[in-house]
Length: 195
Figure 1 (cartoon, helix red, strand yellow):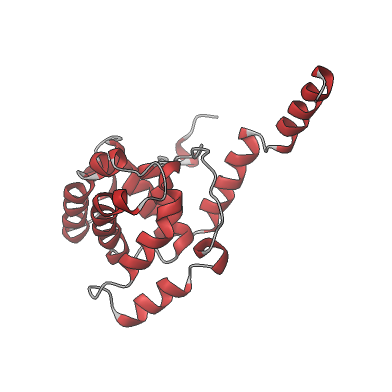
Figure 2 (tube, one colour):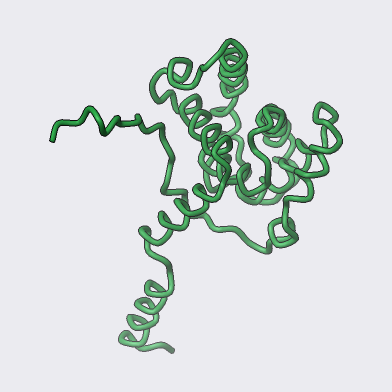
């Protein structure tokens, strides 16, 4: 039997072994910074559309093609609340179909926009769109969406090659929610700033 002081020490060691929220946020910032600028832009736009942060059309629509893409994204993202409500509690296959079918459809849309070029950028976005509970399902939904025929064969090859063996065969996943949600930052003209 473990004594009370030993139990306290084990609890303290366990707390010390866990990374702090600040360290997690810095790791998430670094990961986001490692993505190409087009991917960063698409992730910020997607989070604005999903969470209704400001006017996504005004912030992100540079031309009629991009505005049409944002409107289509808004339609697809209407399913996110449904998807979040269907995240399976365990790995039982009886809960997989109602969850994965709409997740794969929305994922296929995002991958078809040619801005998420890897599993890591997809995972980064979808952990924020759906939450940490979706992590075990993201490798499968990514592979399914990346395999669909609406993508050019070369793009399918590059996407599928981007998922590491470790990500595809992970034995477990963190249930810690993401802490960093990138947003649009208005550019400041330093020439017009008062001294």
